[in-house]
Every structure is written in structure tokens, then in C-alpha cells.
Length: 273
Image (cartoon, rainbow, N blue to C red):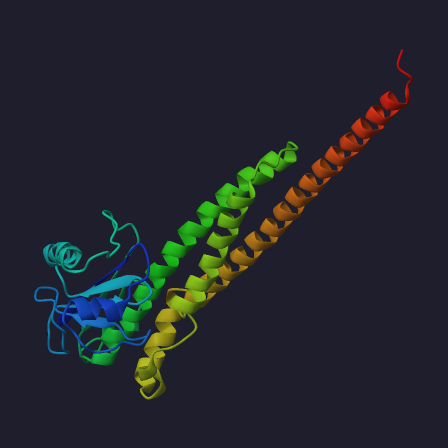
């Protein structure tokens, strides 16, 4: 029996794989769905025969295939040194672990934590990496959007007390954060898109669909989409209330100015002694 480990991490933001490859001396161009596969020790392009590999994805996630904790730490330190401006948080909070066991004598099984296959297939490795990378990327977005929900709850509580102290700049930042969630989950993670290999390999397709269901990729994406739309609706309400408050304030200012003009006019009509 052979056992392979997978460790997925989410970085702070997206990865420009083409710039990253160029800084590592790699001239190949990458599409969004293509991972940059590196040898974790040499930082050269990794092949299917390499026992240890690193998969870097455009949507800001990396998966270490068959790498020990020491190799993972060495790679992260090395990539920070080699690539300028790479955003890797000091503590990688968002992570996912998986395991693949190759055993011809056992029945095939796929769970949330491990999979058992009768034989080795490189397509299976690529799909497992792709799915757990998507999962950890969704986890990062889920936590960020929950944090925004907490901020909105504070605004709602203040609104219940008759207070709405939210400047236009903060309102714009809030709307920008919400739109960022939708754009990141749709444009970068492409949760609903399948790898190209699934269209030509039925076994790979079944593995992808099973793992996508186990990791609840589509329901989690739909939940993010729903929360984003709800937050945008709330932002519209806050914006309308803020505009109404400013309009009322402006109306009072106009009324006061008119009253002052009337008073001045009356004083001018009073004959002076």
C-alpha cells in the first residue's frame, strides 16, 4: 500500500502565476485553471515523477503533495525570499488536509479525509489538489464575509437606537468588500467549473463530482452568493437612510436661512429712530 498526503493553505490574496513563474525563471504562460507545479526544494517545474510537489493556484491557494512539515516550512521561507511582494501571512489559518491510499486489495472509497484507489492515476492527484484548494479558498471568503456580517449587525443595532453614524467613505468600503466577495468567489475560484481532464476521463469526472459534493463546494458558493446579495441589500438601505438624513438636514438648513432672511428683511422695514 502507498500513502500520499495533501496539505492545502490559503494565502492573503490571489497569485499572479505568470509573474511568479517569470521571477522563478519559468517562461511558460498559465491560464487561470492551470496550477504552477514546483519542486518544493529546487523551485523548478515539477513533473509527474517527482515524489514531492507544490501546486500553486491563481486564486491564492497552494497544495503541498507528499511534503513533510519541514519541507513545507522551507518552501514558504524560500518563496518569500525569491518572489518580491508575495503575500503570505505569518500564520496560515486556512488549511485543509487530505490523504490518498493506493491499495489494489481494498475497495475504492472517497471520504472527507481520505480516498482509497486501486491504482495510481496522476489525474486523481490533480483533482484532489484542485478540490481541496477550492475548499480552503472558500473557507477564507466565508470567514471574511462573516466578519462583515458582524460589522453590519453593529450598524443594525445602532439603527434600532435611532443612530446611523456611517460616513459615505465607510459605506463605499463596505460595498467594495461585499462586491469583492462575489468577484473572488465567481471569477477567481470558478467553483462551478470542472477541470479539463474530467471531460475526457470518466473516472476523473466521477472523482471530481464526488469530492465536490463531499466538500460542499456548490452549496458553500451559493451561501456566499446569498450572503453577498443580502449584504448589498442592507448597504442599499443604509445608503438610502443616510441620503434621507442628509436631505432632511439640508432642508432644515434652507428653512433656517430663509427664516434669517425674513427676519433681516423685517428689521429693515422697521423705521429707525
